[in-house]
Length: 120
Image (cartoon, rainbow, N blue to C red; front, side):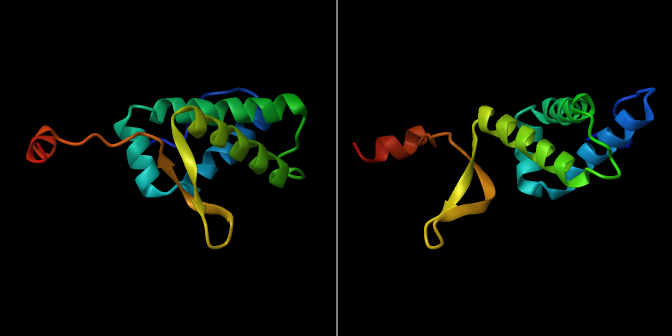
């Protein structure tokens, strides 16, 4: 992961603050999900999605001082759509009938060849 805080250079101070708010949402992603995104090569796409959400907030005219919660919710919606399109789904908690706190992959695990041969 890149060590720099500034991933995108912009001249507009409001857009710069919106980008900082959007990128601050990275810390709320679980480390296992970050590792999965990095391993699948989707980390740069995730950063681009944060930037897209920040530009959408800028175009909507959000003020970083007054509309922090609206900006945060907008960023979370963009990230949810990105993760869903990348094959991740929210885990479902059956006991509370609500969505769980983590994301999982929709991929079907494949059995190894030696495991399949053992049942023949």
